[in-house]
Image (cartoon, rainbow, N blue to C red; front, side, top):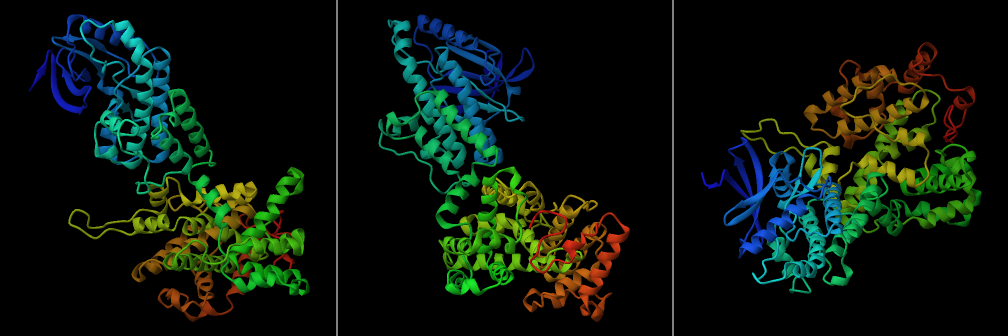
Length: 614
């Protein structure tokens, strides 16, 4: 074992042109430590004393994001600074162990490092050798910067150190800021910048000193939100005047984006909003309906006929809901609840409003190519089938149109991602496919949709849909109903209309998911989903198979899910049995409240019961 004084040198964690970072064992205190020393030893006794004096002054700067110096000293002819290994692992170690972090995590780490550096710069000190290995992060994602003033510039023995310090400190501080930009680039790409492990060498290869251009590419482990991309590219801009010159300025930009992203108003949702402004939320699937909506024959149509026509086109349905609820939001809190009924939406917007909504929709297939459009059609068909199943399962008296639209809204994030980020949607699907069976993994399992979305987008699809619903001005009640019941969470008592509707639509979505599993597992998946919701909704396998059979979808493989206990009777008058069961439950149990008579007698497409959702 090599030794450096009383320290056993266990591993060289990083080496640059200016410094070295060692993992050592302190034999006197019996603990691991991190030891940093300059790559070149001071060239005179006066230079050594100056190094020790500067390092000691830097160690007295206390900030939560600057690593506390345990010891500084010299073991001739080398000076050193020691830190407690318990502070955490270096960012290079974290990347090697867990891969590239999510963009938000990377931004949070960089912002913390910038806070510490800004404090040090304002105190008259610089780091001079920013590397990913010189930043440590602990299990709580708390970041600290190692090695402040370790990589001091080697100057001639006769130099005036005070003058030299004053001359280089500002330039060194600006290099520190660029260095954090390169660290962030390294974190976001998961690869060394310019294939060079030493960021100081990268800095000299970059324009204007060198000839290389450092910008974030598009082939990154996770999609990079445009605001974050702009911040990182500015930090490493080829023109020095375009870069951040102060660590505090860089920190403000990163922290502002982080707060927006954490509040569901930035990150992927910011990208999505930008794409929605350019390409609309969804493309129209039925150009004939849109043409009819813009024709003179519109006036001859009854409101219910217009609503039924709009309901056949998801894009038009969503555009009407967006417009009417946005108008209500602008009127203030006294305007009433969320409108979730197309007939009422059309009545409020008028024929001119319907025509404007139809004109605003982008034609099919929008920016998608043929392959992406085919996948989009399959996702839409799946959502339509889920809506039809939810309508068949709804309790007596609940508006079929409202149930269908809630089912649609529970899938809003999936639809938007497939349309606006088709490549990401494909990656999410691929991650959900189980890997091949191997000796080490005899029962492989793919990722859940949520885990796959986190791995690709950095957020789940439901959160994207909810952020868009909030952006459109849809109320909290509808946003709650948009949340599908988590697979790992038990289904509790359905208390009130809102929860009954949410759970009914969640069950319908799970049943359609069950139809997509391999045939040998299909019936088991249907039964498991039914058991989860049976007590809360008062439904059994008979009603579920009735609802699935009502689809009459031979392409769904329904012939393979026939309930042997129900048999042919499952196809006889399914609605009458379901209605009797629901009405019986509503009169005997609080889990299925009876809707008001006015709602129960409402015509198709009328208002939802007991709530101002219409």
